[in-house]
Image 1 (cartoon, rainbow, N blue to C red):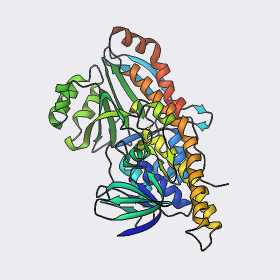
Image 2 (cartoon, helix red, strand yellow):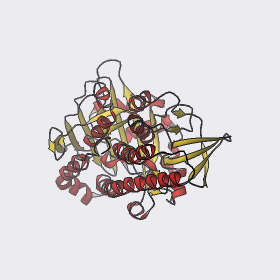
Image 3 (cartoon, rainbow, N blue to C red):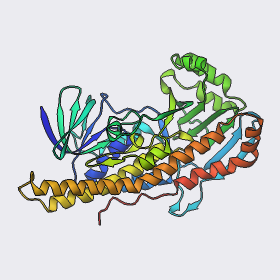
Image 4 (cartoon, one colour):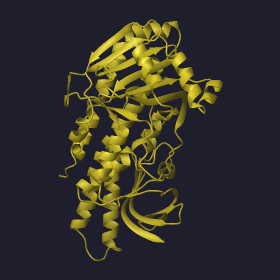
Length: 414
């Protein structure tokens, strides 16, 4: 069975749903394919920096999410070795694009906010893409259930193992040798944490805790596991106990957050990234196909920009695609298969090239910065610990605000 669709988006994660919503705001329908049977909330929460709020406001869902999450006042960094504070930074600051705004947003609430504003039938669950072919000006998207979708535009928002990125010629993202455990602790009453982004470094381990609201605290631990430690990832109970023993000199209150987390409320995964030079030389778009989100720029979580950059991608992509498709509809004639179809295809190709140009250097910058920050934050040894705690802590913290001082612009088309 072959079904014709204008825009097919692979993946109902942050970038897929946000791109679909951006197009919907412009009056353009899209179909979002999701391989699982429901919205996936792996990761539990994400730090949502100023640049992400600009994107969420452009999509029209910023205010509803603000009401559900507490504003963070600042960042406090401490040593896991000495227990002493090494830097403090207020988020009450002005950047080039206005006041800074930082919250820790629950992933399920973000995905639901995006999905709830989409027309019914936009998301097609249990739709795994197995291959992509070409048919004239269209792309044929083959699904595991035998369905074939004939797409005028194909957008890959299908994460680190992207089928679409592979089709564009990107290599599989590289492994860093580091892993991250992310979890969420839910309290029956108020957790009593100040609205701060708390981070702890030392001996090759980085950990942190951030309140999402009055009753929920998100936490993370990143480290470089040995082969024996990797085996623990198969046993959540043992892994939790092992991590508690490795936390070092951090407040008992923070340790209690990890202790209070249910075994199904945290997940461990290896950290992967795309080599920055691949972003510079690779095909972010080719013809009527492009990638966004983790399919484009998988990065380490050291500056908290993965999800934020995905939201930026979505607004820019919806705007560039909107220009192409809305101009096409204004010039429509009955001879869609002839010259008009070619003109439309060329406009789509130009729009996607414009998107790729806008996102190339930004993606390169964020991946590179995250790698450098991660190197210093998780560096081991006396010299590295001394440099980080005495000299680099405020610089590394400052990069968090600096890289979030970015505005992807509005959805409106000139």
